[in-house]
Image 1 (tube, helix red, strand yellow):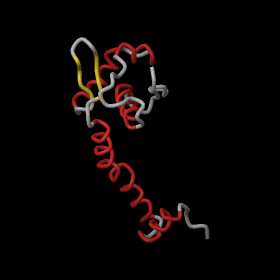
Image 2 (image 1 turned 90 degrees about the vertical axis):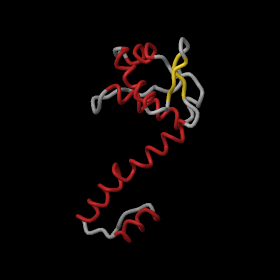
Image 3 (image 1 turned 180 degrees about the vertical axis):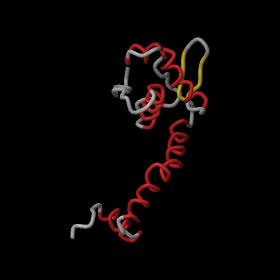
Length: 127
């Protein structure tokens, strides 16, 4: 089974981790659009989890239109899934990363100009 070789951890719910691993494999072209994804039973066996837990993660992607079911065959990656995942992740990028960074920078007296300099030179203040 290609992709999905990551280890599960205790940081978040297992079904969310399954969902995120499938998303990452789609983004990395490990699983391509219109390609079959591992079954919930395969995921359950691979990670030693309950098949219902694996199904919950897969079904989140079905609800988002990332995966679709071919009756009697399995789950497949929808056309446009990679772009849809990127779009969703871009929308969350500000909230997940930038907002906290700006608040921390402000608390340290780092200006927007300083941040831009750090980003463009790829290094912090070395004074």
